[in-house]
Amino acid sequence: MTDARPRPMRRLHAMMFRLPLMITCEAFEDFILAYLEGDLTTRQKFMFEMHLKLCRECRDYLKAYKAALDLAKASGAEENALPEEVPEDLVAAVMAARKG
Ligand SMILES: [Zn+2]
Image 1 (tube, helix red, strand yellow):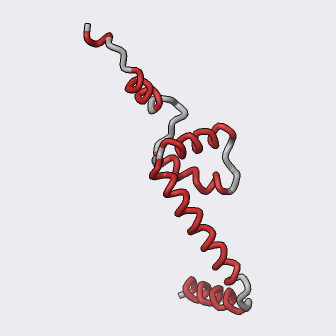
Image 2 (spheres, helix red, strand yellow):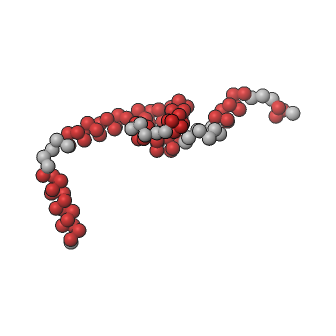
């Protein structure tokens, strides 16, 4: 009857990853943008934050993602300040390509 030996930590660990609320790293990635924009439901946010606590890799990933997003926003703001001639040229180029 060696199987009856209690292994609390092992059992807890196995249980944790069998919980329906436990999401994979892939699912975590899918949630990141919605999380940063506050679009997650309470349940999704809970799952997201639980994964964040358990997974160091995803913590680092989120950090890098945030930094990249901030950078993109900063450069995007500068692009919006450019003269409006640029889009017109683009439209003309697209129209020409469609006709040809
Ligand atoms: Zn992860």
